[in-house]
Image (tube, rainbow, N blue to C red; front, top):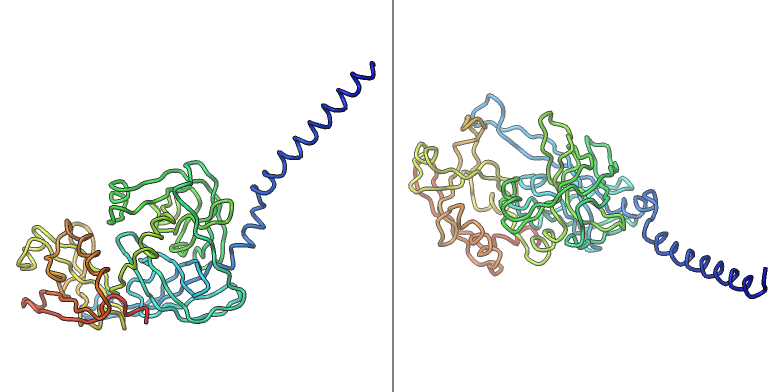
Length: 359
């Protein structure tokens, strides 16, 4: 072989080795082991146990206490935890368990049931607790691999892996159960079950890209359709604006049902449950305790029906406007409610409504 040909060959081999080495490094940095990722993020995931009351079966006006289970994720060293609103909305007590087994009571400081998000705060955290990083969900594409960490059926910090199988915003999210028109959902095939609600979905770099909301199921178990509220919806609802926590659940009533209940306007909110110590209880709102079947679903009646909030009569069309008006209220500013109670209209005045939980 001529000497110059040998030199060229050596040069080409050297270049190929160099290029292959350069190509491997970014891939190694990006594609971290799922084992390592789980070790890094699991200390941010918490188990939530709640106690709340509901109507007693077959006992009109009676109450029973029951326990609930969910998950959440620590997002800062100030003790703020993001979870799903339906896990804590009417909880009388919320207990947070960290990875070392330590348990502390949490206060509910913010909640937006229309996007199924809530924020808790604990005053003390163990040394093992490490906040997670909230990612940019807008950068996530359908088909990307993800993983979910939570406590399905009480099996703490269980990991499931899947993909983003769809994303739904605006009208699509509304048709899937979120009333907030600006909320967004990821659809996923990662296994989600009872106890996963409120837990984090992570991308393959370990960033939180969503909070588990619910599943669509015929059997009651996971069937391949899970829905997760996106991280950027979390930012908008929990961080950029502080959505108020009322401590109540309510169902909208209208049409023939409103007429049957003698509601003096087209629409109203029928209070279902009220959490102990919540702003709703401090306002004196009364829960419903008589179960009836309406359009194939069990609804509680007998409680307060909210007719107006502030100066605005309740309707589904102006719900977002009412919500923003309350969010913009100053501390201790008076909130007015008008309710229908036992056939009579009652006016309620309350000061310091939506920031009560963050004191």
